[in-house]
Image 1 (cartoon, one colour):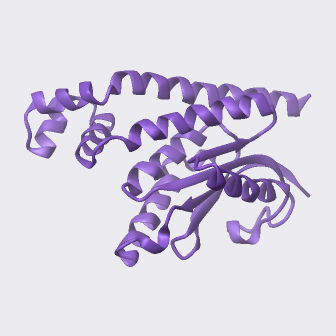
Image 2 (cartoon, rainbow, N blue to C red):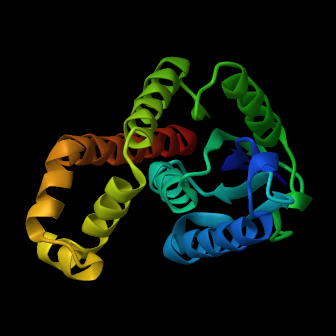
Amino acid sequence: MSQQLVVVLGDVVDSRDVADRARFQQTLEATLQTVNDRFEAAVQTPFQILKGIDEVGGVLYSLERVYDVVKYVAREIHPVDIRFAVARGTVDVGLDAGEIAAMDGPAFHAADRILDDIEERDRAFGLEADDAFVDVLLGNYVNLQFLVADAWTDKELEVITLYERLGTQEAVADRLDVTQQRVSSVIQDTNWNVVNGIETDLQELFATYSRLLEDDAAV
């Protein structure tokens, strides 16, 4: 028995250089657990650490929530960087195992190959789903978003992340004990309104691509 699924593999960049590996592992485990809980309906096999703190992986039913997942993980483990390979394809081993380490198939082989490719090209994200043209465009779109966020300072990222969660500048200011003007300044300096609009487009593009692929598979 086989199934068309979306394999997501993550490779922690320069993991051997992480100063406090035990603490980072705790952060990574908590982050993946939140992913599994928050995106439960989208997760076919839970995300987990695969090799110490070097690699993570999970399986999604479709491409729809891919950007949400990779963005969340990248933000939560900052300033440590991570690369993501996403491959939609056949999984024919361990479908009911409940653990990604027990699974295999062409989609896993593709994800491994993508990881090697994006490491060689110094990219943060790679995608292989169906249409090579669309895959490259979406992949580059995600890479550009990661580059923008990577240029933010730790404090700017903290403000933006809280703003996205709490929804108002006043709530962020209260949480961080800063002025509302300071929060507003960070939002302007980081071009967050533009970035957020692009991210909304990205989420919609992944959802649309996912629906098109599922419709084609049903024909």
